[in-house]
Picture (cartoon, rainbow over the protein chains, first blue to last red):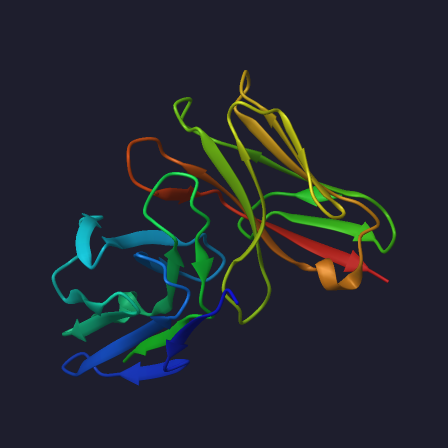
Length: 114
Length: 113
């Protein structure tokens, strides 16, 4: 089983709203990732968590706040987003955060900021 | 044929033909490369990977070739099927101690029946 589950599938929010994206995996993976993907573009790495600790933040604006409450869960808290933040947000996990560990992706949350 | 422009590069092939999708990577220090397939409305799906100490790796109907001299990667799909229609991304591990992937532009494979 290589399933990464993301909820919700779709989200529409206003610029003053606070919302959260959720990602879950039960493969025993200890590395989890958030990516942002704009239409017709490749995924871009935002954050990497290794053993529930943030190990990479790709200079992401503070209106995106990641959280890894346990080894199976990864959240992305959203606050005061801009319309240009509308995108597909992808979560991935891998066994460890070592080079060569295959990253398995969820189906994503399609976010629209109005 | 293949086209590059304002839109995603597209490769159009006939069902049953072989497909070759190309990718140029940027970092000569990258030591691990992966091909992902992304169907409409889905997340990227792992297809095949290759390490920099290899120049060829085969899977089921797919082959990845790595040319480190010119920093080029290709994915060959044998007997292309309609279910192969998707966007294909190459990704490189950007070196260092962490599993940080940098994705290429992507190629849309359109399989004509």
